[in-house]
Image (cartoon, rainbow, N blue to C red; front, top):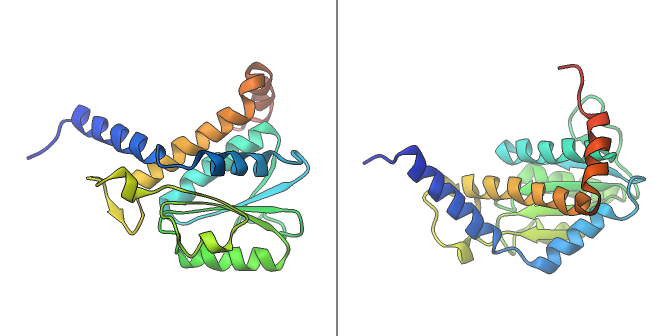
Length: 189
């Protein structure tokens, strides 16, 4: 049996919405406040693996458009992280070894840690200053690719969550923010 595109899209949207509803509103507010505090003086660093990293990179790009100083860990222009900087990480499982390793290392240099994970009570949660967890158990079964808290449903929800964070940050000054963002948008395309 196969599904039509419309059937598949309906399932993806429903599952993503359901997972988004498992977020703790207070933790979301704290994460947004943590990113917004002392803006634009603070530097934000980003790390994840797999498709979660692609989603996180899109969030970093949008923050750069807003005027934040952002750095992707591993890129040639990424400076040393230090006191007062923030490392933002994402891990569907909350146990991705390279994410945990970089969190420990960033903490040694005095950086704060903000995380988004697809599983409550994960090893990552114990190492962060702020964490937002999706809860797949509360969202029910998924027919999408899935393993250990991570997978397609997490990545879709992560993208919509991070885009919602951006909208929350700029909503009160949308038009002005849009004009500012256009000035920083890539022009060597």
